[in-house]
Amino acid sequence: APQLSLFDSLPVLTETPAPQPSILTRSARVWLPKRVLFTPDALEEEFGQQMFERISAAGLPIEILKSNRLTGLRGADERETYRNAKNTLAVVKAPPSAFRLQPIPPSADWQMNLAEGCPAHCQYCYLAGSLQGPPVVRAYANLPQMLQNTAQYEQPGKLTTFEVSCYTDVLGIEHLTGSLAECIRYFGTREGAQLRFVTKYDQVEPLLDLPHNGQVRARISLNAEPVTRRLEGGTASLEARLRAMRQLALPREQGGGGYRVGAVVAPIMPIPDWRDHYRHLLDRLAATLDFECDLTAEFISHRFTPGSKDVLQQWYPNMSLDLDESTRAQKRNKFGGVKYVYQPDDMRTLKQFFYEEWQQRFPQAPVLYWT
Ligand code: SF4
Image (cartoon, rainbow, N blue to C red; front, side, top):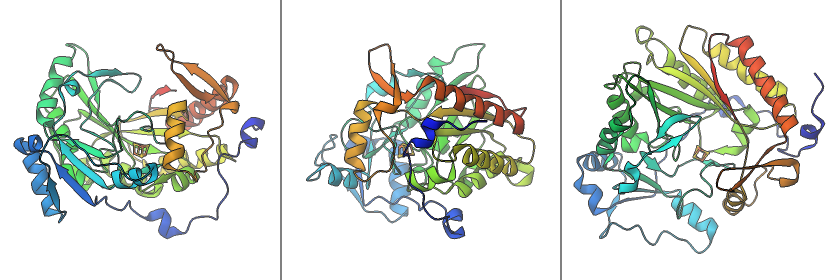
């Protein structure tokens, strides 16, 4: 097939030498924030107490705030604010608004946030421009009540899906919060509901024995090797994520978690030689999942908004990510907001490529959507 001239000319990423095996196989460093804050309200919650014990056992010093407001998080400039915030975990009580769930098509029926803010450093971060205030990780101490609250959103006679990864990487903070395990145990008891989460981390061991009862779809965020290596700071390597996905999907009798799994290929970017890189990714995935399992795919092309571009350029002044509006098409949402996506012809080419390549390797695994 002819190469896309537009994509070939896009200076999305610059070439770097091939990675050494040690980089490819590294696990993500476990996130250990420099500051951990607890609000008084959070400490009154039983689940907040459990988090307190967990974080104390990890040897992290904890500050108990005098009021329930998080203040004093800003540094001298945006860079310092960002650095401080990414090193701060605040355990707070979710506000009443967190109990009014929002639909989140096409990913799931509803989103429920067990935390907001993420320890990783992706240069294209989806959260840029959508978080209020500095990007501190705020974990919710009243999670059990939030979970009970989801029951009223279940639709009788239909599997209702709940996405918990919209505003954080749930596995990246799990060693400190235990929140994902709490969600998995809860949804394991709900016949009519399914929990969906996605991660770029790989510490799945503590999830393997949880009683999920098939009511959970564990998805791993995957991308072409050059994208994961250069743009996804602080996350697990691609190799480590693939290993984690295998562990999650393997049947229990073979030492795995027996989870339904999913590949979220995102954000798809037409980097130089993109066909080769993405084919290689799908080949590696096929080699990873060389046994029968319940697998789905989601394909998400890269996009940005004027607001997210502004924030990302403050967070990552030396970024190598292409955010040139002139090469993109504008898409408007129903409220008039603009996002920049690839041109329609380019989108079609990318979409066709991914559907064909996926179906060749995984004929039984449905593609849930392309966006
Ligand atoms: Fe942002 Fe997701 Fe990367 Fe976290 S893992 S920094 S939320 S894009």
